[in-house]
Length: 230
Image (cartoon, rainbow, N blue to C red; front, side):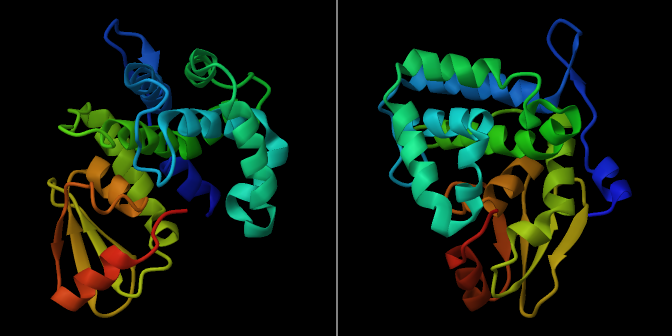
């Protein structure tokens, strides 16, 4: 990713209900903490095998235990990451939710404004929906247009990363008529939906994302069965 691409993919801030400037990531962090608090510690999530307690522990460890981060992406180190996460999961649930809500120390990598905007918005949004859509009877949130725009920037500029293991080509399309060819293969499937739903699909929540899939039946089946996400 070039610096110009990085700069373009950094979402602009939005205003909260009081007219104060806040980041999209901060808004989604608050929504995530609220969802965790409302659900309680033992609710199911879309993260297979994880309850809300497990997910909250993951979020805290991700921001506060740098030593455990490599295991998130490097399988041989995953055992240490999971050991650290389980240790945190034994802490009082209210403390975990408070840590998620308050975020990392200002000196943490995760608190750097550009890193926060680039990395944490998607993380907070997807995990908020992991909690909400893990329960029956969920309905999609009505997100502000600015946040939908920020989510479109994420999925359209980083789609190649999310869909890299797809066996078929992928084009994303939103209701505004924008398209992004994120994986150049044939046959191709067009994934249509609001940017928020496209992000959820790209992060592997294919069964819970409100999208339409246009393509040959076999290509659609291969895409929905693929391992998507980071």
